[in-house]
View 1 (cartoon, one colour):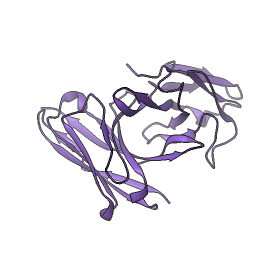
View 2 (cartoon, rainbow over the protein chains, first blue to last red; view 1 turned 180 degrees about the vertical axis):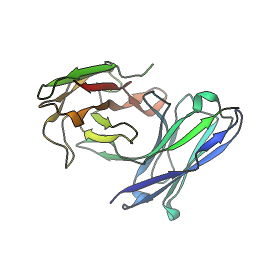
View 3 (cartoon, rainbow over the protein chains, first blue to last red; view 1 turned 90 degrees about the horizontal axis):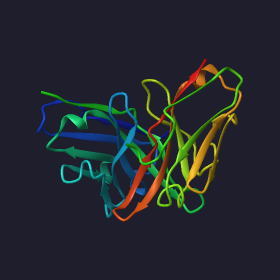
View 4 (spheres, each protein chain N blue to C red; view 1 turned 30 degrees about the vertical axis):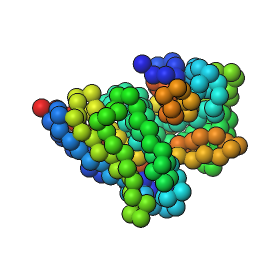
Length: 122
Length: 112
């Protein structure tokens, strides 16, 4: 069974930093691209960042570029998101999500973690 | 402002058929497949439809998807109370800035 378990969320002051982790199990983690997607309270889903299976390709949303860093450790089956210079508008539930690509079905985010809440407030 | 456009709300009575639209552009829906997610209150999104019209194992055939050009739609037939949730469309976007996922703003479905 595919499982994605996020941790590391919490309350942080504006300008502060936080590191999120996502522990993956139930699949060959090193074979999949992974994503972080966030959801502000009462709002919709917003893609944050993605990383390819070998970390060769990394992309960020404009809203977090230069402040957030995505990384992974395939030996530990773990995904990370280092968040610096946090702003109030970064307040959201952050989801770790697995991505699949197949030439027939195209790109797909198929599994999501339960999310971890990040609150940026003074 | 979300890249993909969905109506903010939809409603129907039990047994009815409802549809939710999703409008995009040539760089996302127009050139990539569309996926739909269901999010029940307080839970993570769950894959409902992938590759425009495919249902993952376990998703009832009451749910169906379609795509035409730069738009897609989700249809729910035989509406049930447990279908009350938020629904999101998503697609890969091949823009000049590189690759990224784009989502609709979500549609809150109310079963009257």
